[in-house]
Length: 264
Image (cartoon, rainbow, N blue to C red; front, side, top):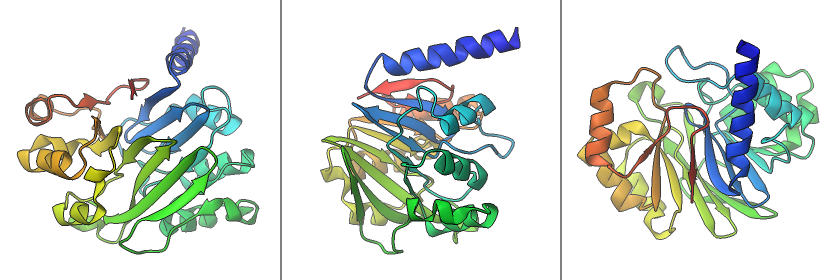
């Protein structure tokens, strides 16, 4: 019976994804699969440790990513915002890149170092694990059908001061998708990035931005996305947190169940 339920879940996940070619589908925690036309990008979706409180991908999903089974067939790019285990697994992304010979991964140096540390055959994927220089300015990466701009930001929380965190802005031939990773809620940094001028279609933002007036103003003034999606939500998040999101960002989409999706 459990196998039957898993089979039906996988079928409906695939069906819901293919009904629209311009959507983002929730995998777990901050992980999403974004498709615009023929381009598919995985962001923070290849991990297996939810730290005991965050939703994690099913093993069948991770296997499907590696094997390139729908909806993970013909992936265009993989992005990893930072090296925390609830966003990224060096073993899983190593398997993904080794099995998908044309797939590149954009990530921080810490992410790439983590992959190298666990892979005996790292040299076989070395040229497809791409990093950006540590600087405060935007850096760009181009491939057919999409452009990725990336900029470093401080990771949220004082205890994470040494963690490299990338903000990704993916442009799919005019459709723009923003993913903040775990970026610190710093208005001065967002002022430097000038995201409000990018006409972003959908932004994936850690839920804690939306639990205060201050954070909601950062989103409205410095991001200005047409749609905002709350991510990184604990499995047992409180009703109080939900009420705050509804109060300060009433139009936000809340990703807290695998398979949810948003079109843009």
